Image 1 (cartoon, one colour):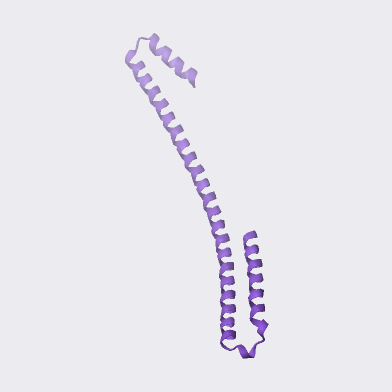
Image 2 (cartoon, rainbow, N blue to C red):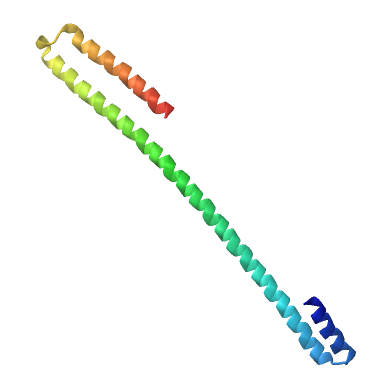
Length: 126
């Protein structure tokens, strides 16, 4: 291809056709400029594709993190429900202490504390 253009250029110069040579030179410059524009466009497409891939990866990572946060918060909610039910039963015991043994209230509190500590440690490990 280059040799073809070289032959055309040499032929035009040897025949002293300056106007035709200038038209040929402008055409060659035009082709080079179009080639550069095509290369720039291909680079832009490639960069957009890479950015899209990175965005997709980050969104997947964000989704996974949110799922883990939700499961952790669900564990906290369950723990809070357990605490609430134990406190409700403790209030019932405090209002009517005659039907329950004296140690019942303290074993309930100790059992809940040990369960909540185990659950919080398990949530931290996850």
